[in-house]
Length: 174
Image (cartoon, rainbow, N blue to C red):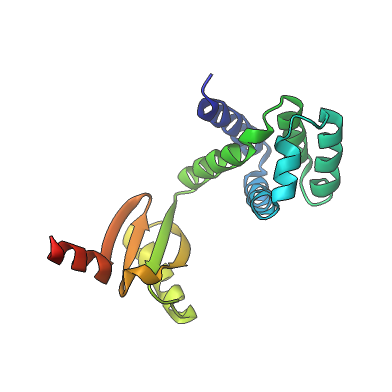
């Protein structure tokens, strides 16, 4: 079976469960935190994804690391993923859960990329403008890419508006 389909099924099952329990926001926040922990700690990822270690060892580490900081539901879900041997899909499951959460809560992902880091006041203003324009909550991410030379790129739910100097120069060159 396709791994992405498996991840979606796990994410949907967890989403349905926590929505019924009324723990949607808490579990979403915990999963974002767990994703950050896994992304920032390659040794933990190597341990979890390795077939060398026993399921019992993995469950013990997961419980020690996340047990005190997560709801019972999140911890049980993580242990189930480990028990079923789906650890390598954990980041995909969390990503798919986040997509379901944002869709249900009417939150759009917006990525603003510019050649220089924007100020805090610009960030607040951009957040407000995007929320008014899109008529929904916005999850804003700011990035810096010096190769843009100037201008910006704005991506809203995987739709790109490119107003960068680098792109305009490429167009002129063509």
